[in-house]
Amino acid sequence: MKAKEVTILTGFLGAGKTTVLNAVIAKKKETKFAIIENEIGEESIDAGLILKGEDDVIELNNGCLCCTLNDNIYELLNNLWDKRDAWDHLIIEATGIADPANIAHPFLTNDNVKRGFDLKRVICIVDAELIEDQLKEHPEAIKQIAFSDLILLNKVEKVGPGYVQELQAVLKAINPFAETLVAEGQNFQVTKLFARERFANFYSNPKPVVTPKGIFSLSSAAPEKQPLVAFGTSHNRHEHSDIETVLLKYKESMNIQDLEHRMMVFLIAQSANVYRVKGIIYSHLFESRIVLQTVGKSLAIALGENWLPDEIRETKIVVIGKELKLYGFDKMFRTCLYSPSDIE
Ligand SMILES: Nc1nc2c(ncn2[C@@H]2O[C@H](COP(=O)(O)OP(=O)(O)OP(=O)(O)O)[C@@H](O)[C@H]2O)c(=O)[nH]1
Image 1 (tube, protein in one colour):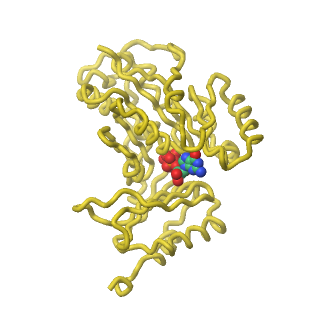
Image 2 (cartoon, rainbow, N blue to C red):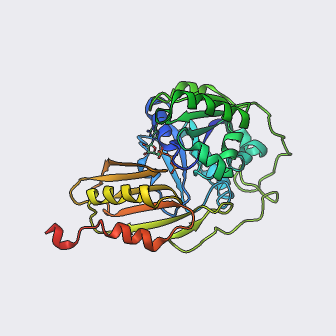
Image 3 (cartoon, helix red, strand yellow):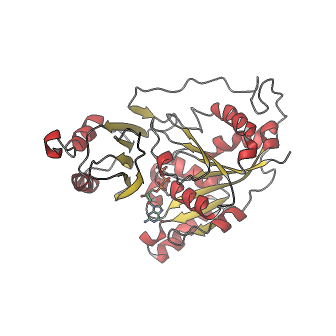
C-alpha cells in the first residue's frame, strides 16, 4: 500500500492560504485533492471560497484542529482512507492561529497513520505587509514559520523590494532550514511549492500504536478526550490564544455601497483589535454572493459564485480579533441592511 501525499498549509490569519490553495487546485488539474478546511468560527466562510471542482472538501469548524479538534483527526483519516481510491493528495488548510506542529503530530509519530499518510511538507504563507506586527503580537505566527519546510512570502507588491530582503533575513533567522519563495503576484509557483519535501525522520518515532477499530485510531495512547470548547453560539475563543471570533447573520438584503463605506471608516478608525473579517453577503441586487474580506486595514469586496437555486440567501460575517464587542458589530452591519420598503 502506497502512502498518500499530505501537505499542511499554515500561515497567520488572512495571509493567503485559501488563495494559494485555489491556485494549486487550478494548476494541478490532474491531481484529485482531498481538502480539510479548518476554521475557528462556527460557520465556514472559506469552504464557500474554495474553487473545489471535483475535489472533496471537508469542513471542520467551531474549533482548531491543532487543539480542541485534535482527536477528530483520527476519525477523519480513517474516513479518508476508506475513500482512498477517490483522491491522490490530502491538503490540510489550518486555521490562521493554529500551531502546525500539533496538526503534524499524528503524521509524524503514529506509525499506523504514517503507513497511509505521508506528510511531505508544511507550507507557511506569510503576509509581507503584516508579518512584522504579527511576529511581535502573536507567538502563533512565529511557531508557524518555525515549523514549516517552505515559506511563501506573499503580498510582496504591498511592500518595497528592500523590505522583502529584510523580511527574508528575519524569516531565515526564525527558521534557517526552510526555503523561502517570494510570490510573483498571484502566480504562486505551484510546481516549486510542491517540489520541496520535508526531511525524512526529522522527528522521533515512538512505538506503533495497536488499534482495535479503524487502522488510524489511537487507542490507549490517545490523550484524554477533551470536550469541544463551547463559549455560546456566537462567541468562540481559541484554546491557547486570546483571539476570538464573533458571527453575525442577517436574512435581510444588504446595501453593498453602505457596507463598503462603513467598513472603510471602521478600518481606518476603529479596527485595532480586529485581525480579519470574512463574509458571504446577500444583496437582492445580485444573483451571486458578495465576498467581503479584510486583513489588517485592507478591504476587498468582490463577486463570488452564484447562489444555488434552492439555497437560503443570507449574510454570514465572521469577525476575528481580540476583545470583540458583538453588539457594536451588529449595530454597524444593521445600518447597511435594506428595509422592506427600500426593496418594494
Ligand atoms: N494584494 C494581495 N492580496 C492577496 C494576495 N493573496 C491573497 N490576497 C488577499 O488576501 C485576503 C485573504 O486571503 P485568503 O486566501 O482568504 O487568506 P487566508 O490565509 O486563507 O485567510 P484565513 O483563512 O482567514 O486565515 C483576500 O482578500 C485575498 O484576495 C496577494 O498576493 N496580494
